Image (cartoon, rainbow, N blue to C red; front, side):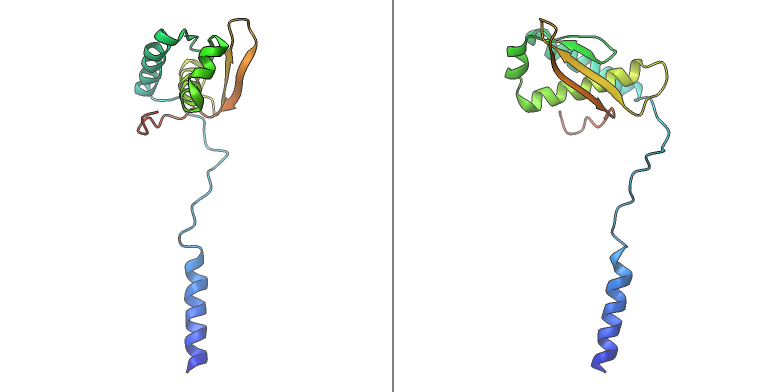
Length: 127
């Protein structure tokens, strides 16, 4: 009787093992352009936040800001700028892209940040 219960519990545990595992992202999923609303939100955010901090940007995903101002943004602020630039780059690309390049330069032209990333359009986090 004990042996049958052990086998039963083991069978249930094995069967349940794969039930909750997430499905891996499909790297071959088609590239999609960010929705127009996300493009407008990213542009508005960069215009609003960049006005006081001296951020100049292009919709291609490039930006220029003085090094000290970039550092004063803090890590969270820099991430927000990078994410918004990636969305704009995805919006302005002639064809949908899985990943876009974002480059932030100082006033002297040196690269402060360069990344290749997938444009995120999840603005619910408030970032």
